[in-house]
Amino acid sequence: MSNHLSPLSLFVWLCIFLSIPAFANAQNGTLIITIKNIQAIEGNLVIGIYDKKEDFPIDGRQFKLATLKVAASEMTYSVDLPSQKEYGVAIFHDRDEDGNIDKNWYGAPTELYGFSNNIRPTFSAPSFEQVKFRLDQSKSIEINLK
Image 1: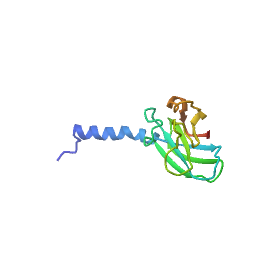
Image 2: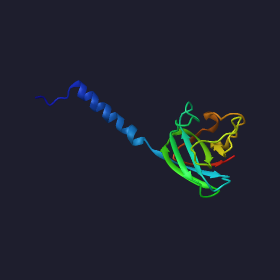
Image 3: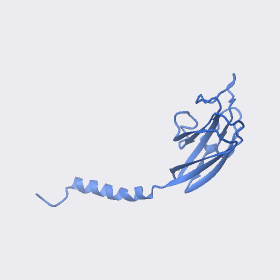
Image 4: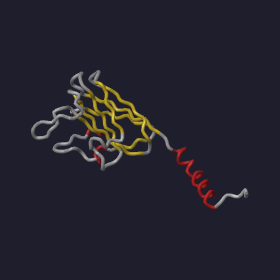
């Protein structure tokens, strides 16, 4: 039996060794979202955090999804996320707690909603480019529901 590593074993160990700094540098940042203009103390706030433009704002494709019971006219949500990335946030006030944003007969939302950067779309949802922001170590944002 030999004490030498085979070329394949050496390659595997080298890959593991070289990947350690990447894991050591992976850090989380804290995103603090203050949601303002909650007009009724009922239902839930549904918060979608997206990290890819092709997923925004598609329901079910959020990077993180949170539901908060409404308890005040202004609420704060804090979450740890991988840092050094771009994110976009979409929120709606699900007053009837059905899990969907209610719309009228021509498709306009009837429940309050908001986006990061307080983008106010007119006839369609904003793009990821409009709502994105960079999370480094920590960031506080405010979203005013409309």
